Length: 281
View 1 (cartoon, rainbow, N blue to C red):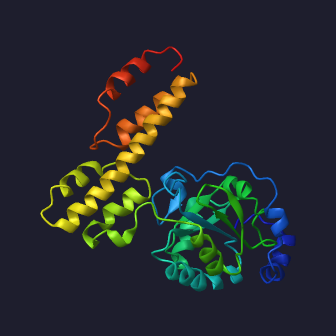
View 2: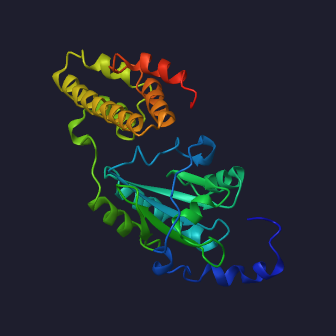
């Protein structure tokens, strides 16, 4: 809580903390800016950055909270319980605090034993994009769901479990975790959430495993990675066809970095070298 808040806000403090959040579903459903999750690791607590691309097919419920309100502090055990109950489902609960520096949010997270991912939305960019209104002592918590295709809609912050359950119904895993042996679950998690960097060599090693169940699971992971590579190749080709050389270059460069260790198109290095000579890049 910023120390500079004036006397009026101080007097409103306790009354506001026990009021029902003010933003209506109609307000939340209003036209919203494009929503993007912060790519910087400094904006995340309890998690590396999560991207919407990595979450495609799955859902995220964003829980926006006011850090200065006792009512919000009292709610955390039920928030954690809702997240725990949905483990293993293709939906993730992510908390968001807006308007405060990372050190303030990190201290709050420690004090309240919060273990779910937390976004530090210092500039309130995510808050605005989600259309939840300005979180404050007059609007102490709100929620929004990011669906499997990236669309944003209002969610029920007073019943996060129901919001998570509703989101899970429309969500699917890219790779069913039930088909993955426990030994490969960390690798599955990286690939499932779109973090391919560093997984190529690990998958290649597991493809030679003597245990049939490990080898079969590795083949599943490798097939999914190959499909993602093919999708990127097609996106790059479409960008080239539309004379978007810079976009084509970015896509091909991402293939080179993110999918190192996987089988990549033989022509990729040559194509990148040619694009680097393009004056528009």
